[in-house]
Image 1 (tube, one colour):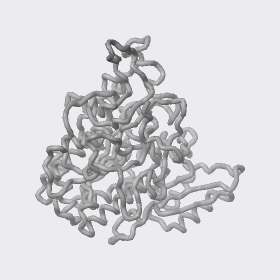
Image 2: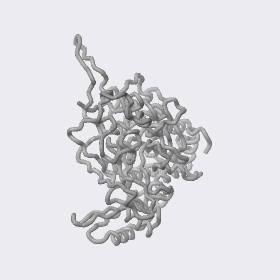
Image 3: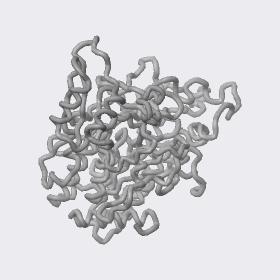
Image 4: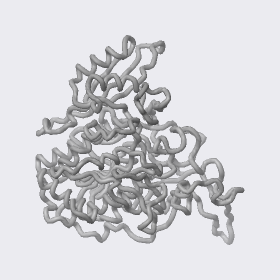
Length: 504
């Protein structure tokens, strides 16, 4: 058996807590969410003041650490909000020291520094349906089993017995991840080479082995900025996590194995002239801390700004695809001036189109960063777009797709066909097999992906459909090669308007 990709050893696991609304501060109105223990995000404050205030509130026996999310020595440094983002970490001098209630600590710090200046370090997950995420979609993180891991497919029960309408999308044959064959060559083989290739950054599980992505000039996971290698396997402080525990007796594929490769294949089909930066920020469990994601995003933003300021097209990106999210504990929170929102807004102010997936919980509860798309339009920035999923008919909305005014577009996201790593294989076996006249005959192996292609469903994949369309519009823009900030903003706004099919 070929072991699943994206499961290296010796990466630390996140210590995760769940916010129980029944035990939240009285009158807070908090809803359920998941967050990283002993980590907070603070925006726009002096580090010494944050350290002193936190130390005063947590008391003796707790060591408070404060560090910038990311710093870069480029100009104009003062014009970027990222310089004001801090991570606060807590550690304990002994096991006898009582754990700090992080939810209450956030509430206390918000009283000192402002409602949107302090936040939990949320657990951010991918958005494929039935991947055990988002965190609140069904069961607690790592509690229980994947949907089809308990009862063998077609074993002893009616085909759809006990399966809800939304859960159908997770079943092979109904849009769930399943191997298929695709008899076409790489679309990039015959794509025209533009004067400048539009660049799409995908922060996800990275890019696995596949013949479509053999040329690193067109698709790569090795993205650097100065001395830093971006992503969870790189050397950015705070981004070098996370890896879920791997049971040596469990050979099944991770819920999100091949997720990033699938996204890259969608964009390749729509805009084969694009250059893909597939930065791995999560393993095949599809989980990353908010601060870990923000560290990589910050470095990527500065990399882009550096390219714009110095006129280096190799560092410039045009589209940022985020097929991930979390649910905020504050039901009324729009957090447009919060740390994560401010970071993504900076991308728009430097000419990058941010595309976020709407989520697969079949709820109107806003998921972030998708819900940031509800911010008022800023004529001096490229607007963020959020994408819900359509069924394969291209007209009906997929039953699992989240809804709300913050969902600004819909694209096909159910039963799509795209690329997966050819090395991807789990421990499931064909139901029957025999050898006849020297030829081996079997039923299909349900998790052998040596064909390099699969079907899958989720708003995770509707997002890159629109991201690919925006990149395709960039290819045809009359100012494709212009690098200045104003040119990037204008080109991005035109590309989003073209892909949306309406003026901005």
